[in-house]
Amino acid sequence: MEQLETFIVESPDAVGAKTTKILIQDVLADLSLNRVIGRMKVYVDPVQPVFIFTALLRLTSPAIRLKDFAKIDMGALGRTKLR
Image 1: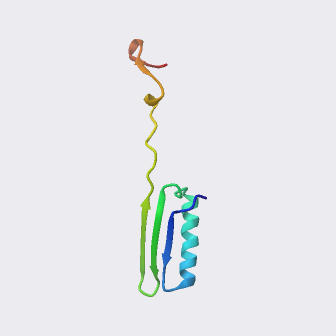
Image 2 (image 1 turned 180 degrees about the horizontal axis):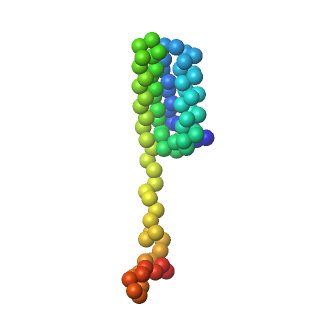
């Protein structure tokens, strides 16, 4: 599992903060979002029902297209051919 740059969970309840952090880490790992999210901060207050979740996304590489590594020409009868 790739680590986040920053991952902070704040809460008046220390046990709840630890549990919330473990839960979020498991969900991110299950959804394979560790590569997408760079930094995350969460605030949880069970007394006043507050849950604030902020995340900063990492930059990803641009999409790779077929035309980036193959030459595409129109062939006979309007069909495309790859070379």
